[in-house]
Length: 64
Image (cartoon, rainbow, N blue to C red; front, top):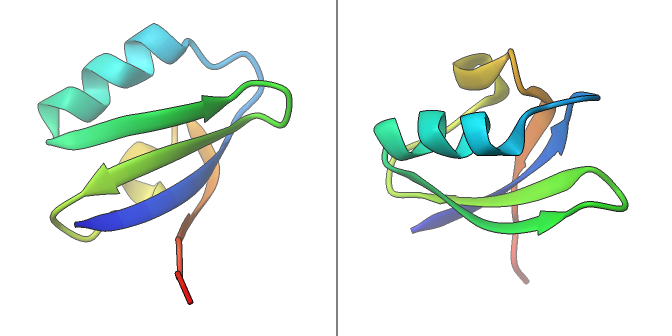
């Protein structure tokens, strides 16, 4: 499973985002409210273009 970090757009409805993610088999594993970032998990590749409405950017978490 791949892990991604995504920067949320201002005023994003997190509940609506969770519903959209669930439809696409993407798990919201953490929400860092103070910095406006979410951690996502997905079996398939994922990019900000998939959810332009919600994210400014999405990067794969490269663990060392």
